Image (cartoon, rainbow, N blue to C red; front, side, top):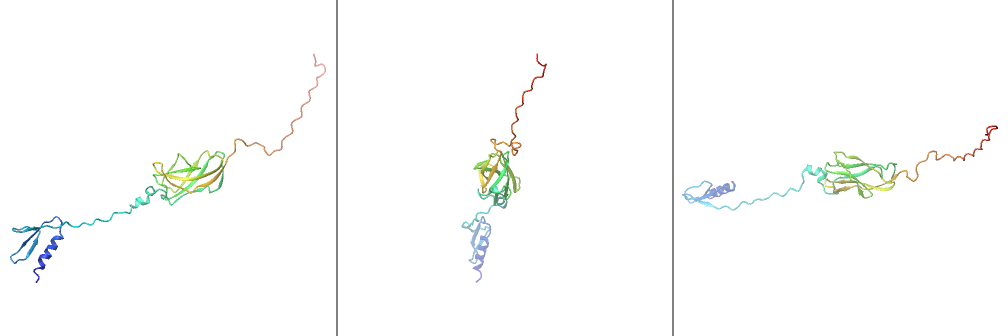
Length: 208
């Protein structure tokens, strides 16, 4: 009763081998079907169906280094924090030279492939501060007109395309007007005009 099991076991063992192996079959002297990967006279070849191959699912997670690099993030989501911390919102800045110095914080630190710029009243500055691996930066805007201005920090990539912009703050720049220059002694009382001097009389005998 165990003889019919032997050919089936041999066949399953052979099928588990390399897909490129050739299988041969013949009938032995006792009438049993025999399978082998070794040819012999009178044996016939067995045609095997192609082996089913299951493709692994595609990898969707980006490498850790790419996830940690803000330059690989989508626009608007590169930095968890991008804010102007100094001056504070609605501050009055006294600067006769019109210089406005900003302290800007980025988290994570500014990427080496990004530039940090300033938007003053919606106009983005031409110059930018490159990333050096730090999270705190200082930028100075020169020749700012006196009055109220809206200021925001802007991050751009190497192509100059805007990636992210901070929440704007309002500052009030105070400068000495050219129409009202400072005066020395402005608080002193005005002096009365000097009286005219009388003419000096001629001395006797000085004529001639």
